[in-house]
Length: 119
Length: 120
Image (cartoon, rainbow over all chains, first blue to last red; front, side, top):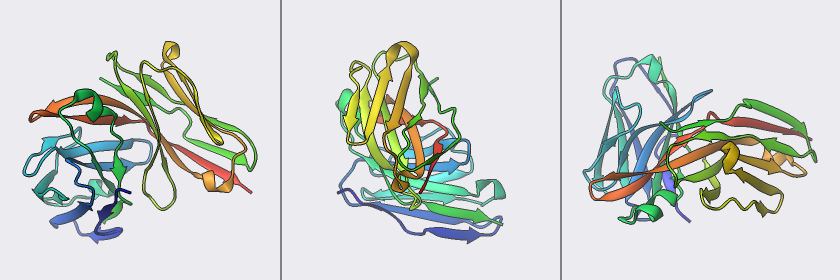
């Protein structure tokens, strides 16, 4: 089974702090994603990465950056945390492929989430 | 732009009742995939089912069944004889293929989620 592990279940940070959320997957997946989940809004894609050192903006990248130095690890960085970034953050991974059809029917495997509170 | 709507924010049922979770989607793609995920209180989203746009055959898996109707752009999920363990948030999602750096990935657009509570 794919295992996606997020380093923290709960985090409390102060406004202006730099925050690192870590995610590790153990199935050699090419694609990794960061989503945030907010009530009434579902999951929204922040960033994703399709390869080491590669990244693409999702739908709501403002205020965030990411790092993927190793294939198994994908970090989400809040450069200067703000209260509107209080949310549940979910990391996910999936198989990548040059085959277009295969790639977009490959299900995402999610971690347990990190609930971040910025005060 | 793709859109997924789950109009039911919360549903509450008593154990053994049947319950249907609605999902309506919008896309201009002719080829797409639809997914349902379950998020139990532990927080981890669990993949339940995937359906491609060319396969309108309904699917049944134990107490779960899915009704895909392309004509109404709907992909509804029914739980028969619900149990307390079915209590969770359920998300419907629509996948589009996006190319980046020589590869492709499935970008999922999620609905808002439906909170299902099954009371004993």
